[in-house]
Length: 168
Ligand SMILES: [Zn+2]
View 1 (tube, rainbow, N blue to C red):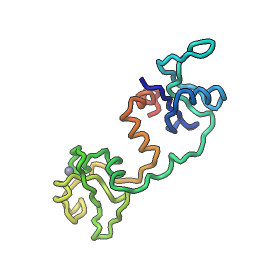
View 2: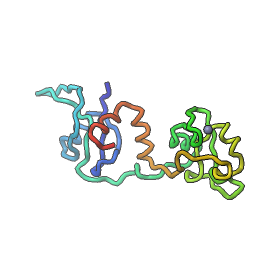
View 3: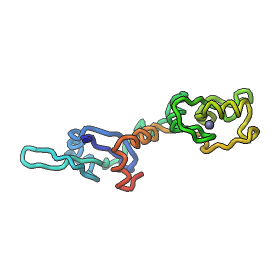
View 4: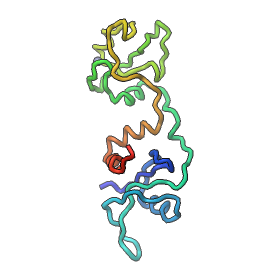
């Protein structure tokens, strides 16, 4: 069972996951309030209480989480959930396609690179999707670090707490 607590920023955006002991310290110092308790019971000196599962900070803190994710081929694959943007096939062995080909001045960045399977990449060649008659399921974009954390959260069980609270 997870003993970590999700900490949300004062604007209810996701900040981080922390140990429930640290979470309790935040709560007792009145820097954060509990939105949801977990099923885990904690034995204190005088009484038994529930460990917090989701807390929100009283104030909004500026954080690094809003920063941009650095560009890398791996991060393009993470953003696109290891799914080819043209045929939606899901696989680990994907290549990176330049939507506007490099030979036409297309850049190697998040706005022009997408996850692409080998067959689609071969089919498209050095053409634009329009020229190749191919359709992009999703537009490429620059992701933020908080988005990347959310992708990882979705894979862990913690995400359901946020959904339950209607936050995501
Ligand atoms: Zn494909």
